[in-house]
Amino acid sequence: MTRSSTKTSPGPLPPGVERRRRLRQERKRERLIQLWRFSLLGSSAMALGWVLLSQGWTLRRNDQVRVQGSERLGVEAVIEAAQLRFPQPLLSLQPQAIEAQLLKKLPIQGVAVQRRLLPPGLSVQLEDRRPLASATRKGAQGIEQGMVDRRGHWMARTPDEHGERPESDIQVLGWTQAQRPTLSRLLERRDQLGSPLQTIAFQANGSLSLRTQALGLVHFGNDPRLLDQQLVTLIQLSRSLPDHLRNQPGSSLDLRDPSKPELQLPAPAKQPDQKTSER
Image (cartoon, rainbow, N blue to C red; front, side, top):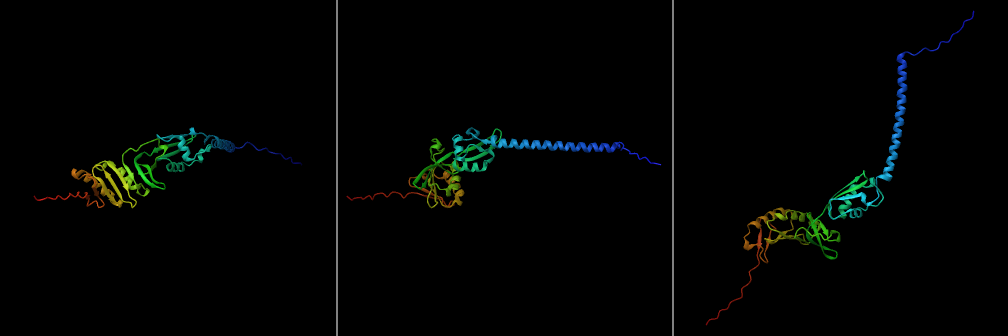
């Protein structure tokens, strides 16, 4: 007897198994599609970034620099002071470094620099330093004529200032950088002294003296720690000193010790001797 062998073909998978197999295939296909999308987007972004960096976000012309806030300084002055060169990648510029450079080289007291991506450019906001008083200082070539702003910073008289004049008639004599904080405090309180301030003078030894319209010459000495108290005494005397003692020729007021002010009057002129003859 011979035995015949029969092959059985696999039957259909159970519904649950077939469903899971199809889900796995769909998820695999979806992952491949997402990977392809990310690759395409990444390549496009890199290409766009390269184009923007090399072509778009670049300073090429002066008109891409916008300057605001100053009545005296424009684009050319800012470009020269910041040493900008064209073309220059916008992202290579450091706003803080440009601000420091502009503060150092331009007559300004404040600046804010921002990179502008759309449209590409550079925005510069300036705050002018305005001269408040005339000033002199000792330079290498002798006495230099200049001006100071309200914070006591020196301002040279140059053609760039377009003939601008100080806001006040105050004169500062013997300006030095070391005395700038004291000068700044005096200028800040110039309208509170009870009388117009005319002169602020610094001696080589650091001694300070003022001249006001009502009291004339006032000696403050060289101790800046007493300045506030000295100003208070000065204001009180401007209000209370009798008129016949104010601003006498040759007189001065000593406030080196503000608790003991001294009014120094010139010695009276000697009268010629009168000889009488007896008759």
